[in-house]
Every structure is written in structure tokens, then in C-alpha cells.
Length: 321
Image (cartoon, rainbow, N blue to C red; front, side, top):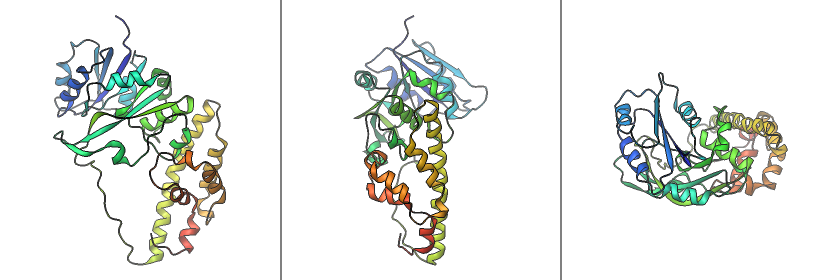
């Protein structure tokens, strides 16, 4: 049996409602040189029965975990069994458009990772009138701008295809970064990535996860209490960011490609309680703001200033937020 060019990784868990449709869309792909690896994480519904009806399909492999290990570990476990040159993560409740694999294969070239847009649908498969890119309010980026991923992510796992060379870097997948964000960073650090605006997946948004826009509440009450709470939230946000940045820093050191600017950013962000406005952070971000804030659609100056203010700013400057 020849080795398939593409390995599709499909982690499942209680996915009976939409799994059949997803599997149908995979086997209806115009590109046929693939294997599909399904790993069920101990479903309690009829998911495993549905999987069993597909077991005699060509290049269809599946396993059932004896105990629940969680989505990320389930994905990594299945991915390590892949034989293809290219790996394609797959959600259990989406629908692939017929030429998804062919377009990705034709476009990846020498890039380590390629990703696309997707079309949002509801639970009844009705269009929500938005693409994923519009919903997330992000810019898609191509190339090797790894610094953009320090502050944001524009790559969704259900849209990506990546080279199997990246599999070695999911052995120790960090808990501080989502797996799609991590793979996008690693690919852009070691080589390059490519973005496609094509909508290649019908991406199902469930009632509890549909993004809604709410009006910003106007401030009422004690200003100083409000500012203190704002400072506390910013401090917590900073701590989470530092933890994530240290994950990237550790990877840079592992591959002997240190980023001196990142080292300084981590050090200065750790001093949040000590400063009013951090000039070093401003200097670094301002010098390369088109790199650091390439993904977000928000104004670069606004994003940059938010990074520079410390606790003393919130303690002593009454502002309207």
C-alpha cells in the first residue's frame, strides 16, 4: 500500500449530531490521496457506532481512548500516527467544501503551513452572513513574521494544512498556547506560512459560541474603584501574556534563534507595578509596529499604547474608558 500524501486528523467526542455530515464531505473531496485518522476520546453517545459504519473505507483508521484525555492530547496522539507528508486537522462538526484539499495541496509549495478562510454556519447549516476572518476581525498574514504571533493569532486549526516536519514540535505542546497558534508560530519561525482568502470550510458556530457585539458600558460609580479594578484586570492580562511570551522565548532558545526584543519585552512587562509609562516597551513596539500588530484590525497606535501603560497610570490618571 502506498503512503498517502495527506493525513486528516479527526478527534471526536460526543459528536453524533454532525459527524456523519463531516465524514461525507471528506470522502467527497476531489483530491483522493489521503488517509483519515479518527481518535475518539471516550464518547458516551453514538459517535463510536457512527465511526464503525465507516471502518471499511479505504485508508480509514480509528482508535478509541480507554479514558478521556482531553481534546489537545487526543489530537496530538492521533497526529503522531500520521503517515502523510501533509497533516490536516479536522473538526467533527464542520463541512468541507469539495475542493478544500486540492486547493491547499496546489498552494502550499515550500511553505511549512497554509491556512484559509471559512464560512460561518449555524447548527442547522444556515449561513450566518460572515466569514471567520470577518468574525475574528483579523488580518491574514503570509511569510515569516513570527513576531505577529506574540500578540495575536489568525490561523484556525480547521483551516490549516502543515508539513509533517512540524509534528516533532507537538510532542511537548505547551498548555499556555492553543495548538493552532503554536503551530503557526513554529512554522513562521522555522520557515514560512501562506494565507488564502478562499472559504474552504463551512464552520459551524453553536449557540453558546456565536460571537455577539455588545455596547461598551458607560462608567458609573466611584472613579478610583473603577480604575483600580481596571489596573487589576490589566495586571492579570499582563501575567497571562508574559506566560505565553515565555513559551515562545523557550522555543527560540531551543532552536538557537533568540529574539533579544522579546527578552526585553518580557522583562519590562514584568515590571507592570513600577511604571506609569514604559518607554522601552514603546521604543521596541514603535520601531516594528507593523510586525508586532500585523494581525489585529485595531489601530496600531492604540494597541501599542495599551502595552505601555503600567499600574501607576491607572492609579493617578482619571480617564474615561
